[in-house]
Amino acid sequence: MKFTEKGIANLKPRADRFEVWETNDHGKGSLGVRVFPSGKRSWVFMYKFQGKARRMTLGQYPAMSVAEAHKRHAEAVQALEDGRDPGAAHVEARQDARAALTVSQLADEYLEKWAKARKRSWREDEQMLQREILPAFGHLKAKDVRRRDVLRLLDGIVARGAPIRANRTLALLRKMFNFAISRDIVEHSPCTAVKAPAPEHRKDRLLSEAEIRAFWQSLEASRGAEGSQIAISDRMRLALKLQLVTAQRIGEVISLRWDEINGDWWTIPADKAKNKLAHRVPLSPLALEILEQARALADGGVYVFPSPRGDKPMGVAAASQAIRDNLTAFGIAPFTPHDLRRTAASHMTGIGISRLTVSKILNHAEQGITAVYDRHSYDAEKRQALEAWGRKLEALTQGRHGADIISFIQAGPIQA
Image (cartoon, rainbow, N blue to C red):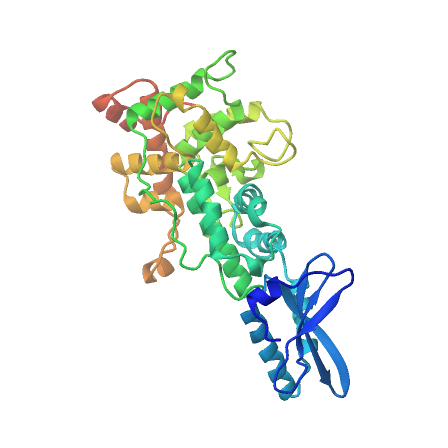
């Protein structure tokens, strides 16, 4: 018989397994269908190699159509004509498929061999993998993930009202599958040609003087207060204030160790700095006052802002969550910890501090030949700038306005 879709579908199961073979010009053919009592059907290929009769399963019907079975059969016949055993290649391919990494295994390898070595924020990747990606297709072989799987995942995240989260998930997936390509784990990325689900807004949020005042005074009002509307721990309150005062990254602030402080200097080690360069931050009197308050809460550990769950620092995500949870009590528009850093930088330039000095405070990496030859530390300029910024913050939080703020800034060092 000549195999057709209708003919295969109409084969009735029997009490015992049986096989039907497709005939050709040479009589009984080598492409067959094996029909099981359960009704399951599979394609089989019978052939001889080096004088020995062999057979191999090509695939299951209807997952493999008649046309696809003919194609696979033709490939097997061509292998025989080339002097190769098609069954051996098939077994090898099946072994490779069984050994192929799942997405869950790929995620582990990505974290261990790429993210942990290169990203201070690798725990954020780990969290997103656990919450968004692995529940969706962690069980699939990485090589079997398709573009439609990615789109379905992203659409679901958008549908629950988190479009920017969907963007971040896509970025992580793209990075992980590019890593997989570089390690010869997969040949193609399912993220190719997938566009970010939501438009990204330019990041230009900064707090006004009135918002800084409201934020700071709300934090102060929560200090050790019973029944306060601000649901935030004293350590987190101090960490957020220190970020605004020093203009450093929240990850560097939240993971601050006591041994990084030497007098009125904070040295951020190279392995924590984003640009992998050690960074000296002069501590203004206001920053030192905050650290003294943190020391009063110290429990003998190495971290200035320890987590309540073990000997480790609080998490960056916890800082973001603390702000989100208290926006109503702050009475200001939504912002993030990074916006506090931007706010400090913008207000420093607003009181006449040069952009170069602010860039040095922010520890931005410089490009070009000038950066190679300029070895000036800018320590004096950074200290002058951060002390002026500290005076402005104190003026704002004391309720001063306009010219009164300027005169207060110019009056000299604030008192701790």
